[in-house]
Image 1 (cartoon, chains in turn brown, blue):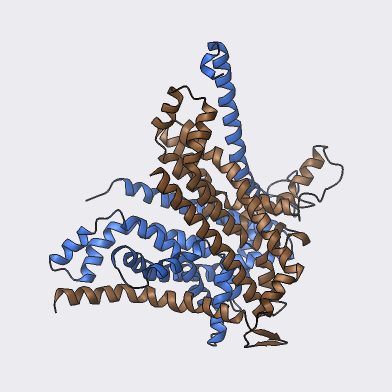
Image 2: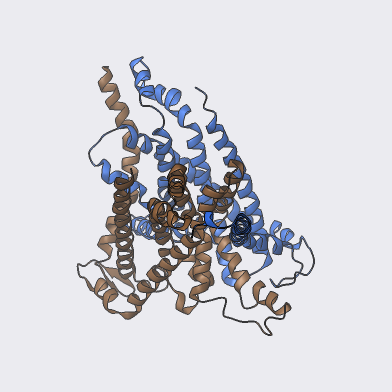
Amino acid sequence: MSTSRLVRLTRAAVLSPPLLWTFVFMFVPYAILFVYSFWVQKYPTFVPDFQFGNYIQIATDPQYLNVILRTLKIAFFVSLGAALIAYPYAYFLVFKVKRPGVRMALYMAVVAPLWVSYLLRAYTWKTILGTTGILNSFLMSAGVLSEPSSVFLYNQTAMIVTLIYVFIPFMVMPIYAVLEKIPHNLTEASGDLGVGRFRTFFKVTLPLSIPGIVAGFTMTFCLSFGDFIAPFLVGGPDGLMVANVIASQFGASLNWPLGSALAIVMLMIVLTIITISDRFERLGQGKFA
Amino acid sequence: MTRATLPPQRQRVLARIERLSWLVGIGLILGFLYLPIAVLVAYSFNASRSLTWPMSGLTLEWYQKLASNSQLIEAFYNSIYVAVSATALTLIIGVPAAIALDRIDFPGKGLFRKLILLPIALPGIITGISMLILFRAIGFNLSLETVIIGHATALLAVVVTQVYARLQRVPASLSEASVDLGASGLQTFFLVTLPNIRTAVIGAGMLAFTLSFDEIPVTFFLTGRDNTLPMYIWSTMRRGLTPEINAIGTLIVAMSIVMIFVSVLLLRDKKNPRK
């Protein structure tokens, strides 16, 4: 057998399992999901059709529109909050911590929770924020409150806090990565030229770290946008998110076509955000490379 | 205006204030990260059934309850079965996928890359429902096996990104030399490529195991009558909060700490490349 034929055979052997798998279990399901979104619900089941009723319902029924807008809002505040916490943390690690060992330990400290069950990390906030929970009983025993308050749990703030807690590693990692790559002599040069430290930060460090912020923002935004566990655990009646509504269409409501249409809308929003952030990052790379 | 123009004594005071505020800020962030986990662990030993402050004495009662909870133990074994199978499957598919992305040019490569990496940012619920529809359409009954296929698919992206990143640091000339010297494709893979990416594969496998063991959104739609551990915990939570959940949680945290230590050791391995 000639070498080139052998190479070709090997390539086919390497290529075919992943290609086959992604085709059968990713491409086909997404395609069916798309097709389903045009079907019609005829209780107790649904029938093939090609109409835009499900999408029209999503666009016109305030119930669905509100949920989508609320989810966008919550995902935005989660990403913003996470960035406001993650940036100073990463900045401290890169520019203020001198010993590499301490820096590594502090970096691991923020990434390690990723290995701890997501469900449990959300659950523990429920035990802390609950009406009869630890924060309430602590404030009562400290004399701050005279009776348990329900302001902590079952609202959007509780959900935002929980989601920031759960997804913050995804914000720290990319920001740390870009800050680490900024040559120290750039900021030193800026200082030597008599530029104040705040101006150095805003004119040199911050612009150079924008790609990291964008990457972290995108990741955190997409992850919290699709979450349905935190809303279930700590969100209240005004805290339902798109994923909860989709889940109920596939469960109790048994309207798979509408659920599929909602999922396609969600998919489109996520893809749009990824595409924009890709452009942005590439732009950044071109500028600072 | 800048700090350098101030008298030295003021400068020193300012520097100390700045240092102190950094330390307080970082301390607060670490507190935010670890207090909730500390609370989870502490209340698993709390004598009272209610999760309130102050704690009311120590007990191992909740751990004893776990040991005699047959549903929980079954769910635990189900999760081990699912996580081990999904990890094996996702490595078998993901490692060749990463090699293909790194070394082979083929039509549709761009689409393939986009598709396989999508689940990193794509909400798990979309993978879950799209596969649910597929399995229903072809008349598959939902079971732990459908969950395994779902996890393997969702976790492919994790394996591919980690292995691909490592492959990019291994010169392609190594495997080319191996083929030129007459080694077959399989020999080259097992004797040249695999040893070079070994730690990345193990690391990706451990991460995949952890993520699968903890997975809910995909499992939620693809499981039949059998429960995995997170699904069992989830259904317990719907009935109310109990210290038993804290006890399971503490055991899972302990398991995670072991996994983290093993992966850090592997990371260290990476810094001393043996050539």
